[in-house]
Image 1 (tube, helix red, strand yellow):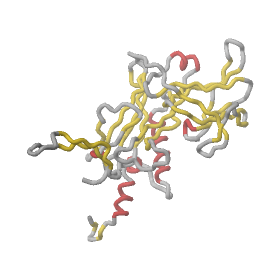
Image 2 (tube, rainbow, N blue to C red):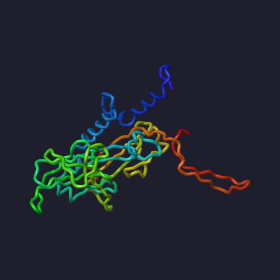
Image 3 (cartoon, helix red, strand yellow):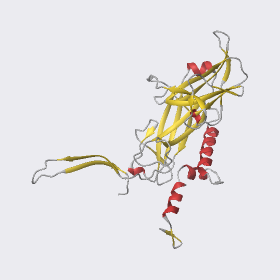
Length: 295
């Protein structure tokens, strides 16, 4: 390929492809690329756009990202799973949040709590990738009159590093460990899957869509979990993953993130079988499951 008779180098082609997906979407929405970190700028732009589109949402967004499941991987590759990370904070009063939870088979309500007199308490940690401190709500415990600071976060299952900041001082519990993200000592909270509730009207629904050649997005059928495996037909296209909230059966709010384009993975054959009889005059059929490479 060439432009004005000038051949386009493969490195230049890859750079153009890289700017597709989230960065291209953000530019279309008015973002002006500044500096040498357009990825971080696009992440912030989408985060701010989510907040602007749902200013009164019952659950405040603190983090959302479509990323490879493999630690340290930066590129979305055919055949390698990607995941939707999300952290939302229930901003409703404690009693309402406790008695009227959002239900999901993939995202679960988790209460973080500190007891004792203080002016302010914050949570920092892996829940929002060590981003902005999350404030806890102060309330008086009806049972014993003790001051309690608490908040409910909606998170996928897994282990999360965290610390409390009480009146400016970091607090750790017994059994704390060194952070794998280089954040010093931290506590670990394990979010477990809870029992599934049928026929609920207040829910969090996951939807995956894939970009098309017309500039829009088509829903990916039967993909409603937090993890998706890119297919060969997805190469060159991008995903948009959404968390859609329904309150008492009515649409309430939506948060989303957009991925970088799916790249072709290295050739790999996960399964190969021969069908038929290995005898003279008989036909043998090869069935194989493979991914990667360019056909």
